[in-house]
Length: 93
Image 1 (tube, rainbow, N blue to C red):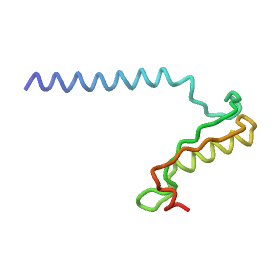
Image 2 (cartoon, rainbow, N blue to C red):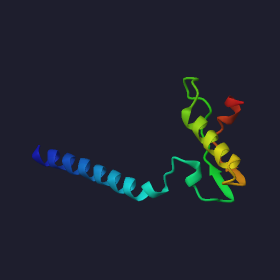
Image 3 (tube, rainbow, N blue to C red):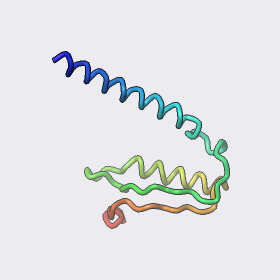
Image 4 (tube, rainbow, N blue to C red):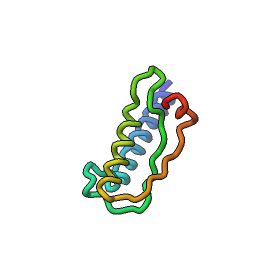
């Protein structure tokens, strides 16, 4: 039983440590202001469903579309390449 508890504690510490490392390494690449983002000719817009299975609007979809539009309208990007979302486009049109 003590070994199982020790193993669980080690897993929790490993997960926490991974989270700390990812947050520290990715922090310089996260922007809150469009003006801070450097110019790129192309932006990759990851696909997601417009609506959740419950039928409510998907906030990830709305935020991604808004961010891409803001980047385009501010002249930070010229082209947008949009990826798919596992065929849920048919349901959202």
